[in-house]
Image (cartoon, rainbow, N blue to C red; front, side):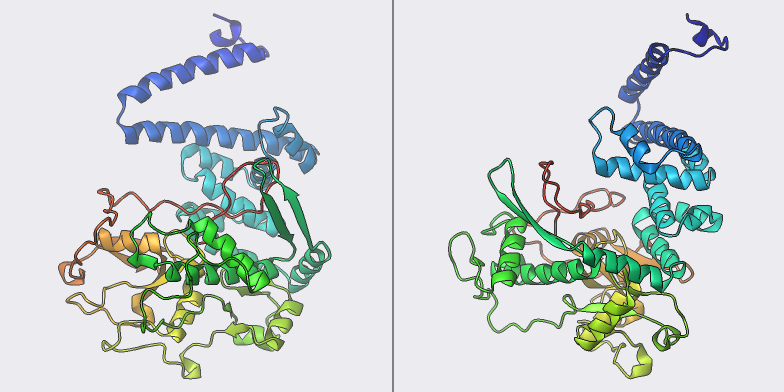
Length: 461
């Protein structure tokens, strides 16, 4: 036994520390095989959270001593096994801990997960550390799932950001706008657009909208899973080519006409999916309130961008019932109107369960319209949910509940009169997972392509 193990004070060698660490990990491995899966995962999460917190404290001490962010990122990449993106995220987490050491303490005790800490770190980075120092915000985010916590963090950032800073950021992004092309190791070619967030959001929304049209033309939900002529990624690519060239290869892999609808004569419901939606108070619109205006599903809008969108008639500023828009409907209509869609987008911002972009969402009746309780088609009984979460809620007979104070959503078991009659399952239809506590698979995080990485491209819808 070394002096380090015996408790005699001295500076241990790296070999000693690694040896003791390996011994501890072997004990955990033995326990892992004996424990139930849920308990084993709890142990692994605890160890991971403690390691993440310890690393953040260590890096925070270096930052406090005068080290630059770049030097900390380089330190994390010394082993040449850490990507730049991961190094930046961990450095950002350390910066937040440097502003408030309680963040690391909460991570160690399990009050705060690493994902929740990263939400705080992102908000802190955009507010010069104010978000990390705000203990009330930290506590609120610690009790909120990360996907919904991002909405709270976004609102905090908006309230603590000056319009001039947003304009300066936009101007810098515009100066750096460019298009790059390169060839990959798979003998394919990549065309990447780099620029301001608002323009990229508009392009992405247009691709999503066109891709959905191609999906419906290819057969949509009427075609069993796995029998579509092209994959989601291929469909997104074809949608982008079609929008850029107006005569691109939008036909499917068999050369069939994609514009031939599988449901002739069926009317499509109005959809705001390609619309830019912003919400603002009367004080913001009149200039009395100088805080930046936020694009729903996007970032803060620079004043010059807002003026441009107003002039180009590409902007929808949602006005509530004071404008006379029919936001509430009776029991006679099952489908939500275009106006109600806009209201749900403005309130929810995206999927209330997983945070998916609103262009990926559907209007969900909290109490089903077909149920004995006859849930009305109005805003109070509506919520935006993505397709996966929509099926998950119906399959497991769950009711969404919104906290009016925080705007966060939870679920409860539906009462008998809140359950819609079961529909007859179609052939080849995927069956729901037997465990209602298991959430739908999260959508992959969107990020710009990296020519040095051979990863799956980001999913657009």
